[in-house]
Image (cartoon, rainbow, N blue to C red):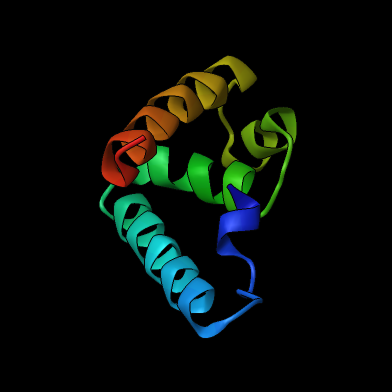
Length: 81
């Protein structure tokens, strides 16, 4: 996931396609419920471990993992894969 959010490189077609994917993914993340969005941003975008994200959010690691499972399903649906 983090790779999809990095600065695009390549020819103009690739750059435009990657920018569109990044935009779609961020739109999907921002539409998530607050707790799920926080877990997704910390773990998928900031590359934080679920244990550390749980500590930062004051919730159990298992809760973070469950929210990530749901977030990934939403992102797959939004991205069509």
